[in-house]
Amino acid sequence: MAIKHLPETLINQIAAGEVIERPASAAKELIENAIDAGATRIEVATAGGGLALLRITDNGCGMGADDLELAVQRHCTSKLDNGLQAISTLGFRGEALPSIGSVARLAITSRRADADQGAEIQVHGGKVSPVRPKAANPGTIVEVSDLFFATPARLKFMKSEKAEAGAITEVVRRMAIAFPGIRFTLSGSDRTTLEFPRTGDDKLARITQVLGKELEENAIAIDAEREGVTLSGFACIPAYHRSNSLQQYFFVNGRPVSDKLLFSALRGAYAEAMPAGRYPVAVLDITLDPALVDVNVHPAKSDVRFRDPGLVRGLIVGGIREALARGGGRSSARETAARVAAGGLARKVVPGLVVRGALVQIGIHKINRDNWDWAEVDRNPFFSPDPEIVPVWEEYLSGIRKNGSSVGAVVEIVAENVPAGIGAPIYGKLDQDIAANLMSINAVKGVEIGNGFHAAEITGEENADEMRIGPDGKPVFLSNHAGGILGGISTGQPVIARFAVKPTSSILTERRSIDADGNEVDIRTKGRHDPCVGIRAVPVGEAMVACAIADHYLRDRGQTGRLK
Image: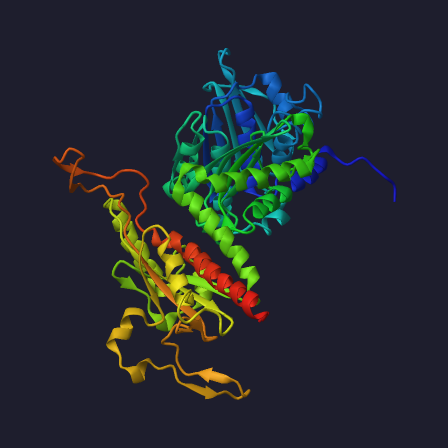
């Protein structure tokens, strides 16, 4: 079979298969062009998940008629004056516009600020129409309609309109975080309008716009430098985590990237401080000489290659760990990082030890213990083992937050595979040390072991944990009123401890008090507002129980030589 040169339209369609995977890919490329054009305002409008319509409007430098003709041709760009050695712009390949035009109906209207009028060019399925004059404001409007009409097979791989619209939203969110000096607006018939006003140099304010106020309350500033490479941004305390990695954002010289090396480094930074199956939250910027990073790895430009990957990984791991250790200036954050890290090590000390925590009460609303399912704890932000209570807590805390108030909570910790016999009958009781560790947590006002205060309501017969021989010939307990500890010594049953967390004092309602001079005053406590600190206390409670058990295990091993 003879080798032949492919038609230009087919070449562009092949390129589109790499560059324009879905509507969100087209949105990303067009937003990058707008940013490279110096825009301070970018408006994105969609319909049908971006398949029916995708329109990007910016107030950038604009283009003239000659520029428009070149812009829709392959490998035409104004962004490679210095070649590939030091790429400082988001776009540079010169493939996006011709690729989009080859598989969709593309219309570009643009006007320079110093021009009397604008111009328009259209590309439909690879067919380019002549440039024509058109009235326009300074800047550029790129309108993409009927995406993939020229390659209908690609449409079969698209997800629902809602999913495609959500992917575009995520692109805008990432760009908004990366460029706080740009105003972003996202609207359309398939969504509610989303706006991100300019925040200038205040990166945290923009992050809060995008990811919510709660992140700001748990964020620690990152500022590290090593051999000319700088790391900045924000990483959250270990107690503030998620069930997936969707709130992990990396930017290299302002470019949003999804690089395996960076995600791996982030996991390494939290390795000993993050509960299993949970993911840290972070927004991190890496700045370095463009010559030290290759962004020309993949057509989508989401992957990068560093000249010294070990340096970058070490900077991320070391910079975050140092920031967590100092806690960003907050004693609670410093303590959380240290405690959770210690708990991670403690779990490794005792063979087979499993320590899990759950929130069992917020305010007056308790879980239904008949619904207890440990798997549910990782599926909701409340660490609740009862899925039915989650919407109740959501509504309840929403009202608490709106009122500027706060409420307490109860956390339950269960430790399994605790060796029988550790602890002491008089001094250094196991339950004594667990209670002391839990009481050392800020805001904790009460601790229960086993039945706790309920023990006052039952008789000695009811309280006794009776035993029988199991099918395997080993002792089996018929109940666990003691919570796995009798006389300060572990029984081998699960160790169960609960602690109550008070409401935070940061409330907006004025309270009566007295000042330093003895005058009666009305005060309002401002600062970090958290409607319920009990949620963040769950991993800390796990860590404290694990540390107490590990301590007693090591004492017992030192005294008796036993390894189990």
